[in-house]
Amino acid sequence: MTLIKNVKFYQDNQQVEASIFVEGNKIKRIVDQYDLRTLDELNEQVIDGKGCLLIPGMIDVHIHGAKNFNMMDGTTESIQAVSRACAETGCTHFLVTSVSDTLEELLQMIKQTKQVIGKEEGAKIAGIHLEGPYLNIEKKGMQNAKYLRHPDLNEMAKIFEEADGLIKMMTIAPELPGGIELINYLKDNGVIVAIAHSNASYEEAQKAFESGASHITHCFNAMPAIHHRSPGLVTAALENDDVSVQAIVDGIHLHPGIVRLLFKIKGADKMVLTTDALQAMGVGDGNYLFGGHQVTVKNGVARLKDGTLASSTVTMNKSLENSVAFGIPLANGIQMASTTPAKLLNLASVGEIREGYTADLVLLDKEFNVLRTWISGEIYTKK
Image (cartoon, rainbow, N blue to C red):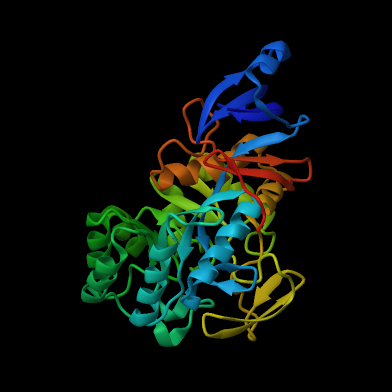
């Protein structure tokens, strides 16, 4: 058994100071005080948190790459690199996320993901997020136009056959021909239907939500802006209490005022922090090939040649730091980074610090730097 003593953490939005016992992969016990004489008798492994912040492991539902590796490379090496990078930045679960591509390339990514699951060198794979290829060319963003196409249920059947239940989320444009049929198909297969890279009107979005879509990928980005006579997809999502939203809180994709507005309307239980990171995460400025495009990262901002934003370089711990700097209470920021995505993905016994829960934990200093990450009770060691 391991004792993590002298830490601060949040339970039910209240900060507490306590010590935590970890036995195997579980949080065994949480105590307010501890008798050190008993500790000596039990001969426990002791880690002194020195008053730092302990949070549940963060969960990234939308990440493409890191450390010069893009998970559409079609190799297990690229997925393992992202797994390690996530662990280093306080993320203990993630969704392997695609970009629009040929069926053959998508199937290859799925095959490699299956090879890594259960053998992750860092954060655990919680499933796959297909971002495309059924997206609207009018709102393609950095998605490669030559791979965008209308929904094809025969193609989806081939993807599902290969994936063996790993598809947890899919981002689509519901206004495309066959979009509603696709939503019904995905819903029947237990997939979270997300909307983005879409030019859906308010009415088309409402129809999609009524059919089973329930999530918005990188809210406000790659979709129509709100207009008072043409409210569009974003307004439909904001007024629907059952719809959750992703927020890329890097200071680039969303103005701080929009982050606060999303939080005010949606609350921490319907707002998810995500990175949408490409392979420049953890590397820095330079030129990269991503989604078939040349991408230039300058001052941490990734853009195509025409200036279009092309994913981000932000990390989950930095997203949490930015959220707090933008005015989100720390307890709610942690909820948006850990608890809410865990519930969104129906991950059992993770996303909170509670007795009996899996010991996915992250120790942060005052600057939100990651001091330690525990994954299923084991301290992650940088490889």
